Length: 69
Image (tube, rainbow, N blue to C red; front, side, top):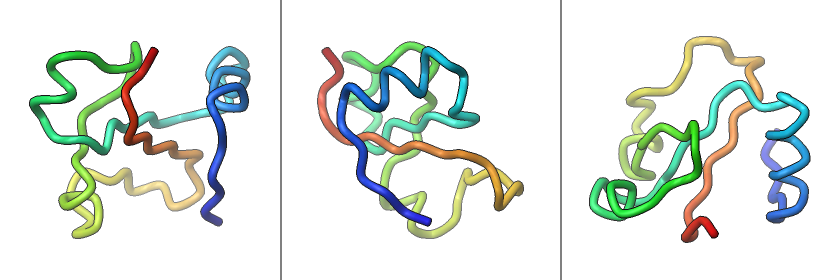
């Protein structure tokens, strides 16, 4: 299931360890400048091709694409 979540819901999920994978879907340059602590870089174009995605299809995965604050 795909669901859009806001900043507050993301923070709650991270604080309660409900997220197994956190991916920054922006490009490498944006990731290097700033990213959410614990996030891995996985640009959207690679994710769409299935590159770098976890094998566990039941894992709770979050992708974000805006600047972290």
